[in-house]
Amino acid sequence: MKAVVARVTEASVEVEGAIVGAIDEPGLLVLLGVHHDDTAEHARKMAQKLHGLRILDDEQSCESTGAPLLVVSQFTLYGDTRKGRRPSWTAAARPEHAEPLVNAVVQELRQKGARVETGRFRAEMKVRSVNDGPFTVIVEL
Image 1 (cartoon, rainbow, N blue to C red):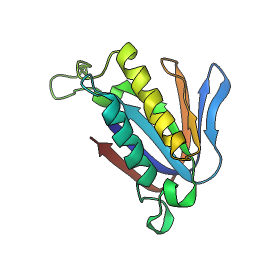
Image 2 (image 1 turned 45 degrees about the horizontal axis):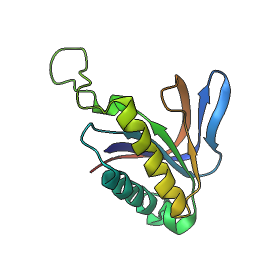
Image 3 (image 1 turned 120 degrees about the vertical axis):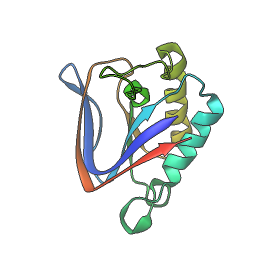
Image 4 (image 1 turned 45 degrees about the vertical axis):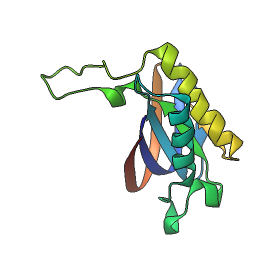
């Protein structure tokens, strides 16, 4: 599993002209990619890592501050661009494998008490964010 995590002051996801997920206060925008070898254990570990990641102001985390997360599935994180000009998607999980694992990350975060908003799996999404810093990290398991 791989995530691009941005510290934001606000973020939203729009599908077909309607906002489907949004945070309107400081928190994290998480673009989450699933590898074809990922398991439920990877989802549990990713949720734990995201919840405790100390990249908010004063080295705080969502766990310590109650800051929200906006989680958006992003298979393109596993695009391989080492050869040629067209990415290969062979490392990315198929949708039927990826969707339950993205949902598992979200569910695990919620069980930990996190406030989580989401995008819509397999939808054409418009993601907007106001990056804070900017402060962006890549989290890989």
